[in-house]
Image 1 (cartoon, rainbow, N blue to C red):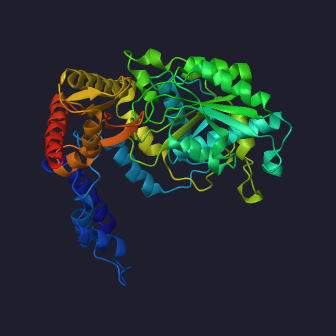
Image 2: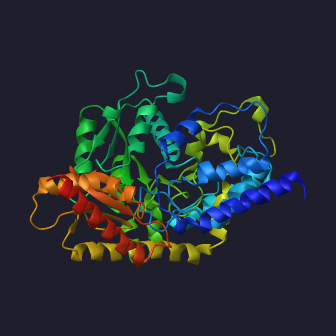
Image 3: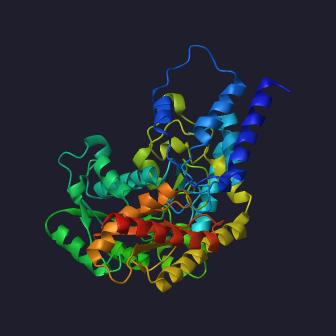
Length: 475
């Protein structure tokens, strides 16, 4: 056995041991202060390490202190438990290590397939080449809004690629206060200015109000601005609310705006027949940002952008120097012509493996398992005298707060505010918090199909015990 083979097989055993032993350890435990310093401040060694010692160090100092998201009792943020096939795909992709900017190698064609598969899963019409894999939905959003900016200014007679934004028409964009922060960040980075992102009123339950959107567009247009973009959420970050996508699409069509859907986490909920109708209109969008590394259980580092108009994406980003020209006759050109990245990692293999291992029916079953569990948790909270729901559970996020009889809102908010950290420190469950309509909430996100009734009961048990401890500390 070669040294390379032995090393990689040992690494695979370490990965397997980590995954199979998750339930034997706390979901999360803080990295000891001394180890934090060791990891962050360690010097570059003068000589190379022995391979066996290197793996042992990884197991002892890294795998022993994970985020915890592989555990079925992890309900934090939107971080997936990676599928074993996706892990294998990521390892093998690293072994090949191409640049997936373009050319004639297998990863290019595999990416075309998985982008098409993702479009099919989301129910989005797909033209070959009308989309690409990115580092995540944040990058996908920058690319989408860049294309929207290009289209709007070109329609106004302004060449933004040649002239920049100085002197250009004032662009305006629209979303609710619940939209993901990556939208505002994209607006900033593209030079449009955060003040140009208008906050549109919602319906009182976190969904964008189409009438308020139309009013805002009309007011800005009357003031001489150039409305160019509206963003709908297919699952907001805090509560998982799905905006009225069909109505937003209609408002955008009437006014000539680019309609972008942030489906990073929640778009794949469309695969659950119980809630599929909530997503009506997503197929009408100009672009959709999604994250295979969330609900599809692909290892982190893989987002996806789907667009309706492939030519618009290429017109926005293509800049091909002579040494990268492709004269093979491929009409699609290189992936680097459709986005920001030039050197692109081989993301497609981990996606392909995680999807192919389950097929459409297996993926849909995993999604439904999560949404069913979320509805079960919703019912548990609704029946529990110590808690109250903060919002309707629409997809697979359950937002709730501590609210037993006999305490006022201020005390309930104080305890709820401290609950996530207190629960995390106990080590049996991991959940995070947020603010919704100005009040703190616990936010349980269910995207691991392994979660069951035992984990849901444990979450409420841990929340209750931690709340009692916080209440006593405040007396």
